[in-house]
Image 1: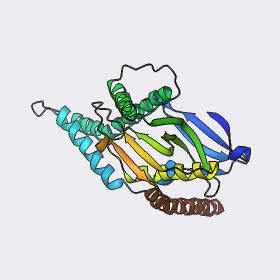
Image 2: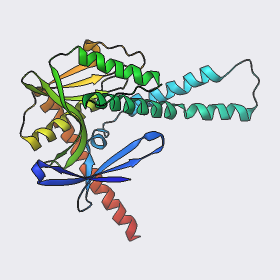
Image 3: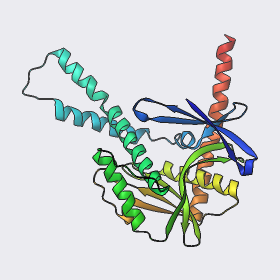
Image 4: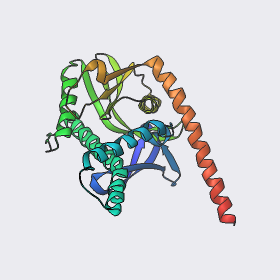
Length: 269
């Protein structure tokens, strides 16, 4: 576990960023004030958006595909073997989800290395290389774009949340905010995340972004279509998205309060 003290708002605000390294190079980040009070993270707040219906459908599809691939109807199986195969199929979505998360992290790392002018060493994983190739296609197709900051920790003093912004920069004289995704699509919670980073960054620096981008990288093929894989966010839409984020923020605050209430009640028995 690693703890860093982050100085923001010209040194007026200091928060802790705590990183826990998990198996498979996965990292978990959370934030605290210096007095150990928890700071809710942007992704934990936007994660309150209910995606269970879509996730349940996807998980069921993964189970079905695993069984189609691995269940040989010509082979006679014992009841025990059948149950073991079904049990493996039930866990398949977790394996695929973890694999996708690791691919996304590695593509982000390569993009960050490129942005910072570091040597980019390509791995053997074809999907990671494809995602990075898509990133380069987008960068090379936008000559005016200048990325200035990446993987920047941001904090909203007004709303007390923190997160890690993917990147910001400029297009000509206009400032822009951006996020990279290696998901299968662009979803609503991503809009709320970007809006939260946007608000916190403007709040701290006293600047104004003209627009934002969510850029999706196709890791399966490396194909890139600016019409399909780039979502431009206007300043007007950012404000609407941030209002939606604040609704989730209020929900998260209430959930934290209820956790403390139930914990206190349980301790009293």
